[in-house]
Amino acid sequence: MSRILGVLILVGLLAGCGGRDYAAPRELNDACSIVRQHPDYLRAFRATERRWNVPVAVQMAVIHQESRFIGDARTPFRFALGVIPMGRQSSAYGYAQALDGTWEEYLRAGARRGARRDDIDDATDFMGWYMNQTVAETGVPLNDAQNQYLAYHEGRSGFLRGTHNSKAWLLRVAAEVGARALMYDGQLRGCGRI
Image 1 (tube, rainbow, N blue to C red):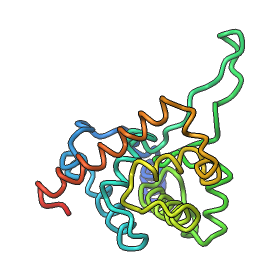
Image 2: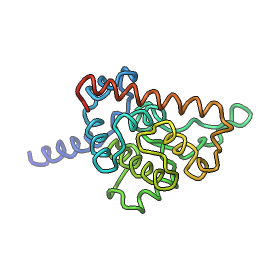
Image 3: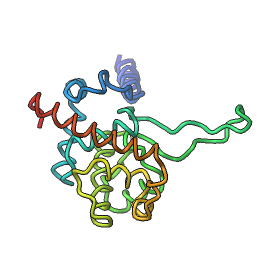
């Protein structure tokens, strides 16, 4: 009997270690709906706001743009001749679409032991760390979602060089991130979440 019980416990533990639910929340244009569906998101956003002073709405707007709140998001594959897979466009992965090299830098800087890009707590903490580095190097305020996003996308040195200024599509996207942060902030205030 104890052998059967041991096997059942082992099977249960292995099943519990199975896949995580990385699906995007419904109603991505409604911040209150997002945090109602995923209270763990709001806890992560608030923890990052306390530690790094990055407003919840700014974090949410950047994550919306980067991954649409899909925890295991990856960049699309590149194809040669339209059919031969040549690897992904970049190493960006997870909620925050952190690149391998930048994530490694974050880990060396003192991230939580075992931090993962597909964990909302770690992804938001990474964003807080990165955005504070942006403030130190560029002077862009933490509540300036539009310019924080430009520096996030282009890298801080690219932002300082103005690489974004020749990319009309990126300037449009960054303006959308800024507008979304304002929209999310108003919604979260309206439903009493901030």
